[in-house]
Amino acid sequence: MRPLAWTLLLLAWLASLAGTLGSLFFSEVMQLQPCLLCWYQRIAMFPLALVLGIGLYRQDAGSVFYGLALAAVGWAVAGYHLLLYSGWIPENLQPCSKGLSCADVDLRLIGFLTIPLMSLLAFSLIIGLLVAARRQGVRA
Amino acid sequence: MKRQHIMAGSAIGLVLAFVVAMFGYSWLQERRLVELAAKPDSVFVRPHSPTYGPADAKVRIVEFLDPACETCRAFYPLVKDIIDLNGGRVQLVVRYTPFHAGADTAVAVMEAARLQGVFWPVTQRLVKDQRVWGADHNPRPDLIWNLVDGTGLNMRQAREDVASTIVRDRIEQDLADARALGVTRTPGFFVNGRPLKRFGEKELRELVLEEVKRAYGQSGVAP
Picture 1 (cartoon, each protein chain N blue to C red):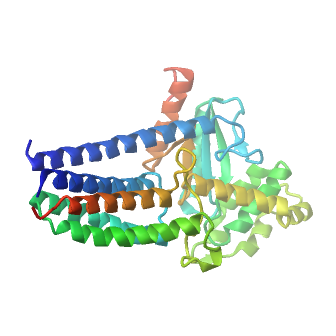
Picture 2: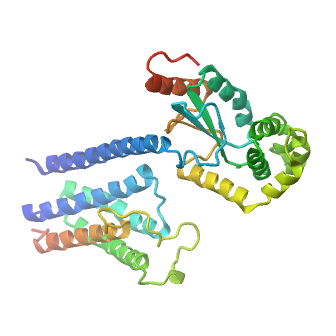
Picture 3: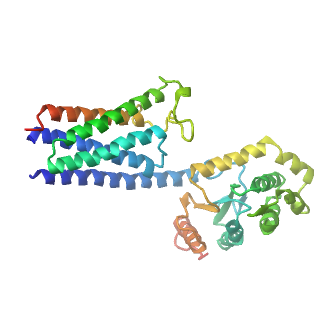
């Protein structure tokens, strides 16, 4: 792998690791219960930290593609969650009426940074870095 | 530097940041609770909350109490003992947490009794005769009224108050505060905002002693 491609992959991995640790901080330290949509995003984020990590360690270019697939799914769910959160999708279309509401705003960092927004930013960043790594020629 | 070293270094950095944030957060959280506990109206104590012991005591035990809970019954004389032994330095605040079946009637009667100034005789009767009305396998809240007759309670007034929304709202408030503080089992103790982390009589006495020493200097009487 070229040095620049590897560095981009490293940054994507660190972003996924930060996302994983961050979501664990919200649920385990701050005791905010994850709603259903949060869990779907976690299902994409947690393996990203492992897949990209192993890919980096073994310098396996294929990991970029596995990572992209996971990140795309997470990005889609996060986008849907954010629309729900900010009221663009009416509440009666919520898939998670049982248990916790996915539309309740529990947390807002520095005024605007909600959890779904952080999630969407993290997945966007990971996708951007992985695409850039691919352009840099991971196969070379 | 080898690529694997860069990886390991940055991962360790992130995990360290996580650990630091974890300890920082719980430290802040504890300080916030201690500050809240010093206020006259907070999740720890509401204007309606019954108390035992002097109001100017610098140490306050907040007990989330379920009159149908066996451990609460076992702790009832122990808590009284802790307050009495500390002669004026410790106050008890009781919060209503009717988790058991039938306990909702009992706490409503306790609040009605508080309105008439007979909270303690009524509560003592309910706790003492807990097995009669609040047995786990066979709760009989209908027997409560007979039990508290003769404790000085004006029964007609009490029945009216128990049915009132004011009393119901106060119990709801206490339950909401219990949820906010993460109390899921009774009795739940906080001493000046610090939760009793390991449950037990010895642990409670130690926590109270610690707070007495902190508030009154080293001359704390061993409770």
